Amino acid sequence: MAAHDQVAETAGRFNRRAVLKTAAAAGVVAAVGPGLASTARAQDPIKLAFSVPGLNFPFFVHMMNLAHQHADAIGGIEFRELDGQEAGQPSSTKQSNDIDAIIADGFNALVISPNDVQALAPAIQAAIDAGLVVVTVDRNVTDVATLAHVGADNVIGGEAQGTYLLEILPDGGTVFELEGQPGATPAIDRKKGLHNIIDAQEAVQIVFEQTANFGRSEGLTITETALQSNDAPAAIVCANDDMAFGAIEALSAAGLTVPVIGFDALPEALQAIQAGTMSATVEQFPGQQATTAIDIALAKLKDGTDPAQHDTYLTPIILSAENLGQAERAEEAGITPTGSPVASPEASPTA
Image (cartoon, rainbow, N blue to C red; front, top):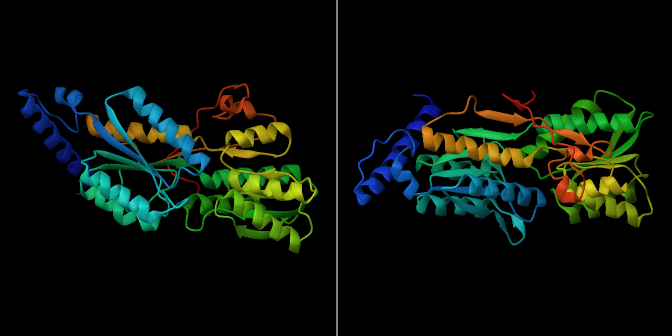
């Protein structure tokens, strides 16, 4: 039996037992099909947990908010937010402990963006073994047989940053690169995409590369360090918007005006682009990621439906002053929406 079939069979057994127990208690005789398809299900809401590395990151706050709103709109869902941060920092141990708790509480499904894919793999496997339907979002755990993964193709996002750099630096120039959290697949893939473009030419050169761990304060201090040991760059490219904000602060303190490119399309980034203090960011549709992942999990629980493919990747786009209205969070930023394009899904990420 294939790994995904085993997961499906386990999830089906788990949920059928729950429905039969509820039906018996109510004196109801119902035909129970795959997952939770029965009249008893209406009396016993689906218990779905949504876990992110840390709600201290605006990106994950938005993802969680959209996930919660989507679950509320669907109805019949007991939704639990799981914040993976501890002492102000993302914690794989905290996320693992949260998973243990929802297993003990009899949850049916888990949608998770793991802080560290390798560190979270054992806990995610434990959830699957306990009968939970598990879908990863944003960060894929390839060593565990989850039902599905939904994310943005971060390689394409990094390539979009690189292409934009070449456009705004037609005569070439030096670039600082602020990298994301080591071990996080978005950080790895964004860097790969950027270098797919930059390494193929000679005019634009990255002269400083260092992680700022997706953090604003580290983005500030790392940029200050880079400016002390290098001439002012022609541009700075960052693996997320928070680091970009730190870089902008460091540049401002040094009296420098340098194009800064971020990633995540946070409302603050959209406003900064509109004001001219930031050059561009990458939209990766976190709301669509979250809602798609929940829909996949619910389809499995309710109807026993498997996704067409394990991996669904949405294609990021670059946002600059010319197309800010296409941002998923344009209205939140006070920008008139022009219609966020439906992110096109791919069967697999860019090689």
